[in-house]
Amino acid sequence: MDENQLRFYTTQALYGKELQERQIATRQLVEADLSPAEIEAVRTRVELALGREDEYVRSAAALLLDGLAEKVLVSPTMARELLALSRSPEAFAREAALRAMKRLCERGHFFSMKDKLSMQQRLEEARHSEGEEFVFSLFEV
Image 1 (cartoon, rainbow, N blue to C red):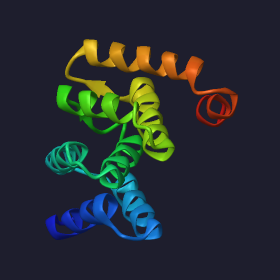
Image 2 (cartoon, rainbow, N blue to C red):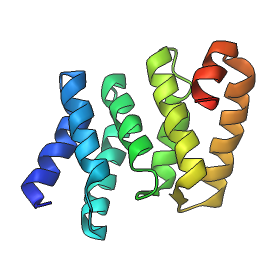
Image 3 (cartoon, helix red, strand yellow):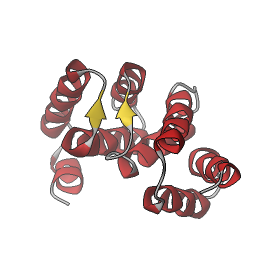
Image 4 (cartoon, helix red, strand yellow):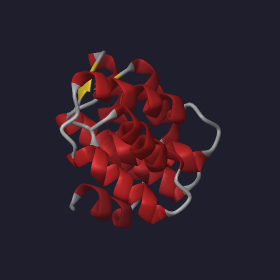
């Protein structure tokens, strides 16, 4: 994937106005054979998006991380932002963060084992507090 395509798909996945364009861009990034430099570029953009005020953008970043869990190294900043998003009063944002955290804990790579343990603890907390419907959708699918 050339640099322009990478930038385009990452921007669409994080900031696209339509759900369909975000999904298509995310799929392109997930299915691409990205080099280590390209993965780092995406990781940096995702980390910046997770730090934004806009929960729509933060949720999109979490969804992209969910898809790229096996490829992206999770920084302490990313872990902290995902944990914060997982406590959002907005159900969609909260579930996007929890889904990303679940996938990252299963398949991801972390700078710090402490971050992984914090995510696992939050997932267990969510399992007990979010209710049966949430648990069924997030943990049983």
